[in-house]
Amino acid sequence: MLLENKYYKIIGIDKDADGQSAVFHVAILPDCDVYRGHFPGNPVCPGACNIELIKECAMLLTGSKLRISAIKQCRLTALATPALCRELDVTIQASPTYVGFLIVARIADAENTYVEYKGDMEPDEECLQ
Image 1 (cartoon, rainbow, N blue to C red):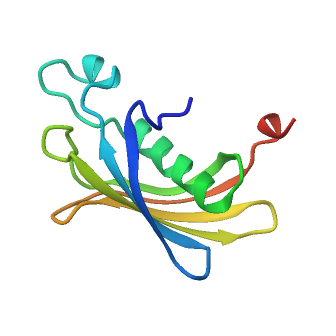
Image 2: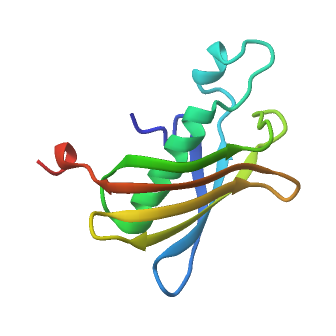
């Protein structure tokens, strides 16, 4: 399920000249249905949605439909809420491997790092057919 324009909206992208890394500036959409159940009255950004956000940004960077094949590290280091974290930076580095990409990512704002991620993503064969 793609979360772009439902959970978040991309407001800018700064790509490095090498084409293997970028910073995606995103706005969290507080009216998203996710927050009605996670948690009503005190919404927080779910870790699973943040991992999907990383995957979707990696797909934009690489130009490939991807699936997560292995999560090597995922640290949720601070609690992100739509009330306090209206805009976030998603930093992605994609290093090609023999089957796809090694993705190193971070979700942060000026004050906090919320997620640190490292894992393998490979082309999603079902999406390619």
